[in-house]
Length: 295
Image (cartoon, rainbow, N blue to C red; front, side, top):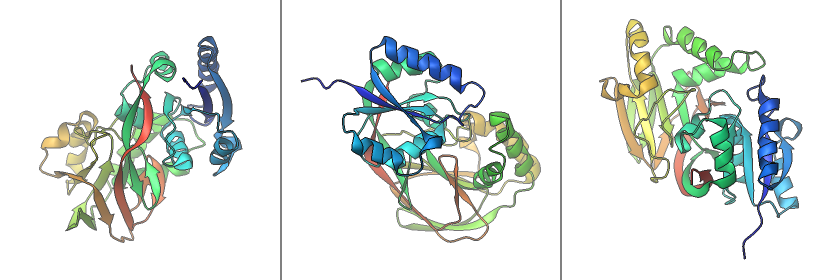
């Protein structure tokens, strides 16, 4: 017997502020045309635990449709945990790196088509100190950028504001010593940044781990070591294209588990959301996320 689909439409009004209402109306019209049942759930009106409560109260929901950005998807994944409900994503945020990593489709109409007609695919999840992540973890330079963006989330600017913050911080950021282990092997290195990702893309289009595969049961690690400040601007475009893979200052690893030791002057983020200071324990959960992808 085929189960009739019923979607919980999770909406983040803060993502992509200037256009979200028009895009939401268009999305709902397409859902109605496809005769899909759905109900709305606004993240700004509901705190932590409310999404889980809603799903428990009404077990007839068969899947979730996330209308938002990376932070909204991270919120949903951490609310539902490993409850195997398929998730679709229609982007309304500024970064949307998780979608780029999962199936790479950013066109609005195509994303809606995937939500309505797409097949269900299995992906890995990352786990950091008990919190799930879809795309990745970063500590060092990128964590500092996210921290500084925190106080400006109410301002407009989005992607360009993020890039300007990157450019402002990159020249003066000092490499710092970090102690960590990868699958039990101990390291101590001076770093600009260390990323642990399930996907390829960070920070609104920086292809940090170009060879990452989001369903291979492994996390991809990119370690960026000491680079003189004047050369950072020269190498920054390489991070946009993934061509930094050839730099001597870069090291890449694949792992199932990482431990980041305590450090007082390095901050981290998770899926672009500020995380704070280490220590962190990071691992992979194989095929724990169901996502609709192109049929």
